Structures are given as C-alpha cells and as structure tokens.
Amino acid sequence: MATERKKEKKPAAPLKRQLLTMLLGTVLPIFLGMAVINSVEFITIRDQVYTTSQDALSANMRIFDSELKNAAVSMVGLDYDEDNISQFESSDSMEQYYAQAEYMSRLSRISSNLISGYGVYCPLNDSLIYIFDNDCSVDYRHRQTFTNLIRQTPEVLTGVNWHSVSANGLSYLVYSYQLRDTWFFCWAEVDYLLKLTDNWLTTEDGGIILLGTNGEEMTRDDSLQGEAFSAPFEGYSLSQGYLVFGQTSETGAYRLVEVVSVWELIRSIFWVLAAVIAVMGAFLLSLPFLIHSLNRRFFVPMDQLQYAITRVNKEILDYRIPEDHTSIEFHKLIDSFNGMVAQIQNLKVQTYEDQIAKSRIQMQYMQVQIEPHFYLNALNTINAMAQVGDDELIQKLTRCLSDYMRFIASSRETVTIAEELKNIDNYLEIMKIRRGDSFIYRLNCQPDVMNISIPPLLVQTPIENIMKYAFNAYGETRFEVDIRPLRLSGKNGVQITVTDNGKGYPEDYAARFNAGAGDGEGRIGLQNARTRLRYLYGQETVFHLSNREEGGAKTLIWFPIDRKEGNT
Image: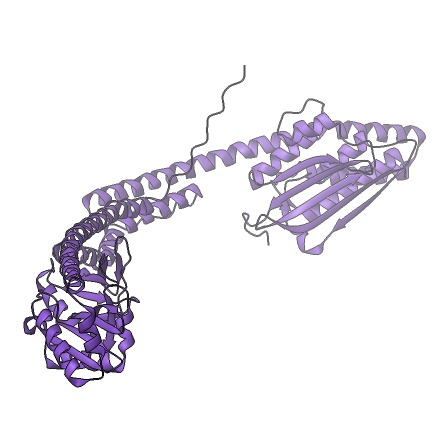
C-alpha cells in the first residue's frame, strides 16, 4: 500500500532576519498607519474647507450677480426718447447741453452698492457724460482711466452683458447697450469689488481672484504669490501649495476664484504630523544603536553557537565557544555546549580506537577470505608441471607465487600503488603460466601517484574478476588498467579504471552493486575491495561497475587523498 509522501518543509529563515523583520514589521506599520490617518484627516479637512468655502463663495456670487443685474435693469429702464437722443448726438453745443443735463438728472437717480459710475457716450460728436458713486470707487485715478478708455477705445462698450476690460493695469466690469449711435453704460471697479471680498474668506491664509472674460486675472489679493491661478469649473484643484476653486457668474462673463493655503488645511494636524515625523526620526537615528546592541548581546553569541554547531557537524571537536558574559542565559548555554562537545570528543576518541581495532580484525579476515581459491589453483598448476617435468616453469611459478604469498601474508593495512602493481606483475606471470599468452594487458600509472596508499589487492581484485569471468580460452582477452590523479567535488583524489573486452557485468548485478546491495552471484572479491576501501577512506569513495558501449566491463574506483597524512 502506497504511503503518502510528507510535504517537505521549507527551511526556516535565520533568527537574525526573523527578529529584524519582526521589529520592522511592528514599527513600520505603526508609522504607516499614522501617516495614513493624517492623510485621511487632511483629505477630510480639505473637503470640509472646500464645501464650506464654496457655499460661501456661491452665496456672495449671487449677491454680486443680483446687484449687477439690478444695475443693468435700471439702466435699461430709463425713459429715453428720440428727441433727447437726437439732441445728444447733435453737433449743436446748446442741444448737447440740454440733453446732457437731462441724462445727468436721470442717471443721478440710479444707485447701487457695487456700481462705480454711470455714463452716456456718443462717438459721433465725442459727447460724454458720467456720474460717480464715491462710495463705490477707489480713487480718482480709476475714474479718469476709465473715461479716457471710453474716448480712446469706444469698442470696449460693445461687449455682451457684463464683461471685463483693462487699461493701465486697472480692470473694470462694464455693462452697455446702444440706442442709435449712443451708448448707455455703467461700470464697476474690480479693485473695489475685491475689497468687498475681504470678509468672505473662511480661512486666514488665502484670497479672492477675479477672472475676466477670457480667463485672465483681473486682480488678486496682495497676500497671494506665485503664477496665475486657474480654477476648474467643477470641484477644486491643488496648485502652488493652494487649494483652488471658483464660481462662475450667471450675469456676466467673469469668475470669482478663491485660493486657500494648504498650510491652513494642515495647521490643525501639524503638531500630530510633527510628532509622527519626530518619533520616526528618533527611531531611525536610534536604529543603528539598537541593531548594534542586538548584534552584540544576541546575534554574535548566536552566530558563535551556530558556527560551533557547524564545526561539530564536520566532526571538528576541538573548537570551543569563547565565554560570553552578555547574559546569564547565553553564559549557561555556551558553558553547557562546550562541556557537551568535550564529552563527545572523548567518546569519539574511544569509539574511534575501538573501530580501528574492529576494522583491523575485519580487514585481516577479508584478506584471508580472498586467498584460498587462488592458492589452490596455483598448487594444481605446479602439480601438473611436475608430472611433465617442466622444472624451469616450476621454478618461475614458485618464485612468483612466493613473492605473491609474501605480499598477501603481510600484516600491513595499506600498500603503495607501486607495490600493488609489482604484485600484479607476479599474479599475471602466474596466470600466463596457467593459461598461456591468450590475453593482452596494459598497465598505465602516472608517476606522481606511485606512493599513494591503498588497501592491498584493490587493483588486483578487478583483474582477478576479469580472469575469472571475461577470459576467453578460444579468443583474445584484453584488459587495461589506468591510474591517475583526479580532482572530484573540490577534493584531490586518485582514479583507478579497469576495462576489458569480455561479456561485461550482468545488468542486474551492476545495478545492485552500485546501489550498495549485497552480493548474490559469488563476486565476493569486489564486495571485499569496496568494503576495505571504505574502511580506509570513508564513504566519500567511489566504486562503480558498468558496461562499455563497445563491449566489456568497466570498473571505476576513486578515493580522496586529502584525509590521509602522507598522501600527497
């Protein structure tokens, strides 16, 4: 029954990162929250100021429109007859005088709270009369400028409804209508109108701007600085640090625009905002000191502990964490860790010594296990040669066998590669005497690895395997041994490769062997060789069986040489 595979947990983040993340994750949202609250409050105040100011501006605009409309109606409602107009347009000075007197009398009966003056003008004879309302006029200069403008540029009277005109830096709103060649008009000085708006403002910092027929600024409050303002026809806009909104007249072609300083909007929340900035600044200034304190009192001891654990994992047990006095907890923890590592070191030394003794016994047993089948075959060969009286071969065989047995009987745990190759020469001489010259071999070994230590019979075992399983009595048997230095996974090592032209390893056997399974086909020599190599060089060794594409078997052995003293 298939078991459900547990989901692999993601590796935990370092504690230092977790603490800093937690600290920033706690403080920053507070600052951001306060900033958002202040932003919302600013938006709320801005909308409230806009609503209140816009309502007040609309109400005052209606008053303006009402006054201007009444003035226009009064002008149109005058009783003008043809005789008066004819006399006013006449070239006769007496007739002009009587008509002017009549119009002056009628104009004097009109009054308004906004109108600066009323007048009648005929361009044909340059006949002009006008009256002023001193309460609605700023000064004489305004009156003189406007009357000169009428004579010099009479077309300013041709506008529709109330419209704006300017001259010599002064601006006016003008209403006029024409009967025959005579113009009847009234006007309001914009500077006077602006004075009336002083009490309209709902905030202290701000002002009123009057925009003319083409959207140009006719006048503005002296407190307003910067470029020209332009208010949207609906809603408001933010420009040059001001909240800008306006109201369009229904009576004439002009607009009233109110400008409110943004500082006025944030005045009420300034100290809260200043406190937020001050706290944030203090936090940022203290952050390096806070990190330094955490690093000295917490992160450094933790890093030392983590480094020590890493050293222990690498079986380096002579490292001790320096004593820490930043806190009682870390002092006890480090002291306990150092004591634990010392106990592990003592226990490992004892275990290592016991393992060495055990390994020595096992290696001696495996060496004895390797020998019997070869000895028996050699003795049978000597017996056969004695029967035919071949004394020379018997001498050669016994000499090679003597050297071979002396090599096998040695109690040494390791031999050099040079010694191993010499023993292989003796072995192959014996095999030639037994099986003839039907096999060809080549031994390649680079000189700089000749003095490397290996378990006895490590190279010979694959060769014995070839002579047992790959030897072809009816054909030619070829094999090659190649020994060279090879750096693998960042470590220096030695690679031994043995190849032949036989049938190769059975696929299932090679797969089981490479997977580390036990031997099930009598090839105990390869198992022993791998086991002895691992006893000597550890689990980093490589002992791999495979088959060549062109035919034959391949045995690949690699072991590190950095771990053993003297293997350089």
